Amino acid sequence: MASAAKRKKLNYVKQLQDSRESLITCGLLLIHHVMEEYKNKQNMLRRHVNEILHSIFFLGVIYTGGLTPDQFLSATLAEGLRQEFPEPFEKYRSHLPKRTPFSILLDIMVLKYDTEEKVMEELRSLLKKLKFPYPLNKPGNKHQHVYTLESTVICISSNNMCPSKKYFGASLGCKTDKAKSIMIYSSCINTWHKYVSYSVMSFTHTQESEGLQFPGSMKCQAYLRNWQDNTYKEIPPCKNCKRIFSLQGEGTEQKFYPFGNCAETECLSKLLINDNFMQENTEIKNYTRENMSDLETKTINKLREKLVSIPSLTNMLNRDCLPVFNPDSGK
Ligand SMILES: [Zn+2]
Image (cartoon, rainbow, N blue to C red; front, side):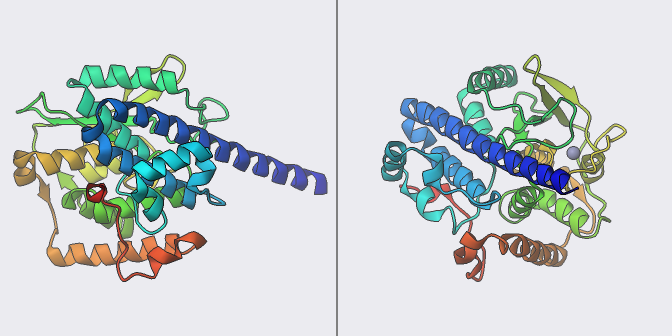
């Protein structure tokens, strides 16, 4: 018995080490990639580089055991980045990110390529080049074995009346429940359109909300990347998304993930933020300023509960409100 318990513990330690190395590797791969992009289009991407560095460093802090930027970067790279982008280094322990590194990467791709087909094609080719480690210890496993920073599911939404304008979203590429919950709570308060936040929060806290009802011209399709042949395959929405966004189809089982984890959330939030017709014609039951503020308070409390277990974030928690990293304030 003793040796079985010891073996189990050793396996756990090994898995933590693998995951830690994978997080460092993937963080570095993303940083090198965005720096290459930045060299070509400096002014356009300064905000994105600031934001992606901050998001990677923050995920390092909340990762089991904690990682500092200096554990991601070589001394020379750290020095160069610190000079050019001081803000993420100063604020990664005091400010919340608005989104994951992969969502920011997706935004850079959308800025660079103009059609849905081109974005998907370039994304596949980039992922092939980056060679993130395989996240599962065997195909078909439900839980990620290592932390990779890749969102394996992406989603595209549009308004049929304006079909060329596509909105991309990524699932939360976070391995642990704690990281997922922190990113979902932060996104509800700081990032997503108020209707999306309201629905996700009411399902999270009461499981009873009516959800959103989009007009018939809303189109939304999620895709899962297949590791074997590096293609994106269409997948139906899960039960949570079906309920929250009143999507068509049966709704697949997805009991391992909390509400708001799927790629639908981000792309439908972008659709609502950018499309006036969708804003004006999407129905949401029981939405009032008072209910919203109630849910926000509950969510902030839940977020504080999660953050309090991370010792290096005490600076953030001592404030009255939880500050969010705003890359627009970069130099
Ligand atoms: Zn879903």
